[in-house]
Amino acid sequence: MRHKYVTPGIVLARNATSEASSFITVLTPDLGVLRAKAQGIRKPGAKLAPAVQTLSESDISLVRGKEGWRLAGAILTYNWFQKLEGMQRIRAGRVANLLVRLVPGQMQEPELHQIYSEFLRILPTLTETQQDAAECLAALRILRTLGLDTEPLPEGEVFSETMLADITDDRKEVIVRINRGITASGL
Image 1 (cartoon, one colour):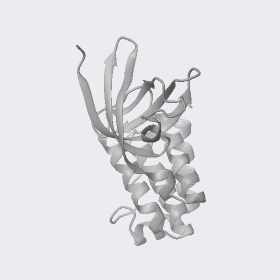
Image 2 (image 1 turned 30 degrees about the vertical axis):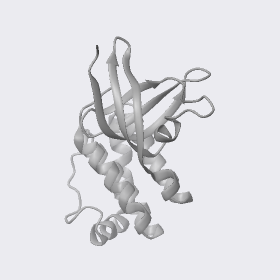
Image 3 (image 1 turned 135 degrees about the vertical axis):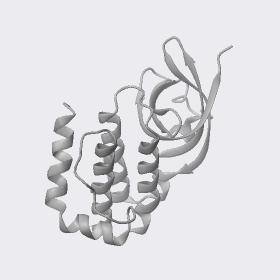
Image 4 (image 1 turned 45 degrees about the horizontal axis):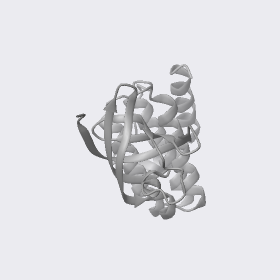
């Protein structure tokens, strides 16, 4: 019998693989970013479907098999897609896509989960300008965690008004750093 891993996770992406199955990309604090096969979640009335929608935060049960991870169960904790509004969803999606794109296979880096979950929690409380700065800061912190940016971050508490104001003031430089880090990744 295989060991079942239970961990909180945020679903970053979901890609259909067959008529009823999908691969989900999950960001977890324990196992990092991983891809798992979720069988039967595309069927009408599938019990696990709401817990593995994109931008869902869930307690996820996983089993490691010969061909990779497989979803064994999931319980929805929080649905960020419903909580976030139009542009906030787009921003959360862009940062999620950055994670999916930059993190190859399974990478155990707990700080990535912390960065993204803090970003999701702060996003609804910010003004439009602050949201843009928070998106830039989240991308920069991800790149820094992955070793693709070595320049210092602005001083202060993460996602504080002063830090977001510093990011807004230096937005062009920050965008250049983000683009340089993405280019350094080779993608």
